[in-house]
Length: 188
Image 1 (tube, one colour):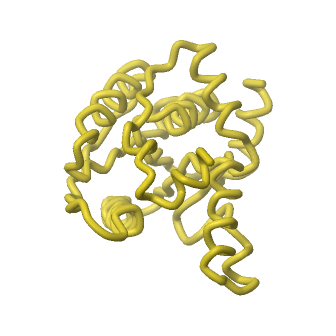
Image 2 (image 1 turned 135 degrees about the horizontal axis):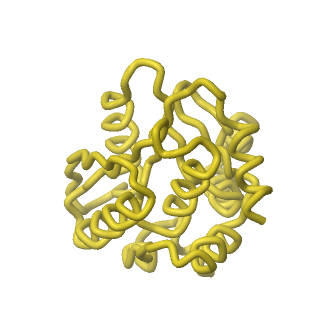
């Protein structure tokens, strides 16, 4: 499985790119960081985590710090506070992408750990909101400087990868909050 994941990463990410991994503290992004280091070495990889100042942010940040230390990769913490309230997920996502985009140096790309499960959830959410054919296309494998090299890998596979290698990660307690449509789809 490790070889397949490293191959997927190498196929999806340009060889000459300096890589920034968007860490979220969970198993998916921790696994992506490990895979990126296996594929490219830690000299051309660094990581960022965006701290939204939400109740579980400190747990996710601590997990990202442990993972970065484990693979000897520089971690930058970007503050992008978001207040709880309506459309929290969308507002946090927008703030996160803007913070990361403004932090990328010339020649750097950002890899995110979106999985096939994220893809399915996104398509279902868009279908429920009446999206047209463009919206139903789902998450693109690449948009501008953002790459999603593991979009065809399941969340369970990445969790298994992390557990098999004792990779530190934290499950975000907010992923259980039924106020968010993605969470309801994921659990129901």
